[in-house]
Image (tube, rainbow, N blue to C red; front, side, top):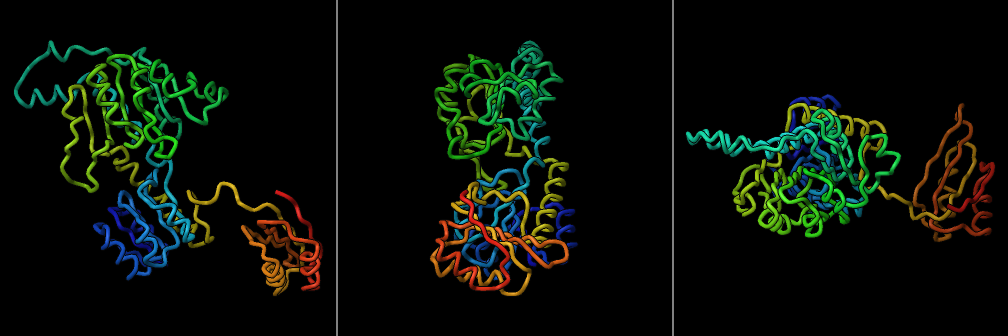
Length: 400
């Protein structure tokens, strides 16, 4: 197995990949056409990336079977193109949750105490204790959280440590789970905005979350409240946020933003950072040694399971619901050619197999094949299957 690592990656992860016995190609600076050519020429089976975009031409260039995003999201990968070619896309969820939560609270404190501005004044030799003595404090302030995945949940113990009640919204948040987590369940993002003194966003970038924090959301926020986004830029309508900063005095801290340069270095032209009360960081939420070591270890685990079982964990592009309508269960003797005969008759009937598994019993004398089909086989097809081999013990068809 050949693994192409096309981003900067922890030494421990590279050593772990090499320890699996395959060939590891470490090309951290490859991008665009150069990466496409490397995928083609290397005949890599596995591609590992962090922030590098993986496009359709890249996925179509070689013989990739697995793409791993060494991080929590996967919006930098053309998942649709991968699915069309049967390429698994996996990620490393939860491994950077603590790191991002720590940065989010650092930004919350920085907004409240105006730490960046004060530090900059001291660098310029200006002492203004009166100005920087103005801070509300976090104790008793309501923290609004959008999204209660791994990162959102890591925010909760930190909020409790600061004495902050939490109002939260998530599509999957039930009343029972809200009670278990100790948060007030809100019915919409706008309800969170209205209740919170500080809002922290921890949502994945999906079709249903694009622009979720828009004009209505910011209109619901309290004047002078704080807004923190360490998730994805696409979740926020940045123009609406800029209006709220100007018109309502909203203070904002952003680790992600609309005009973010695509590489590790570049020029930032976004006017939002020139507005008063806005601070930013360089998309570094997951960038702690602890998080990167954990992500590297998870990447090695994914490759190991792919090598050993042919089925990697954390795959994000498997069908949530199979298009199969019927299940054909075939109990048979575990002998050569049985399943081949069954599949031949299914093919002759023009029926497509969506999924299949064959479970062998102790002693390897008999097995059960479970075959998911896109339509019900006719009585004639079942009779043809039964006649095709004497090694079928019994069959049944179940609607799904």
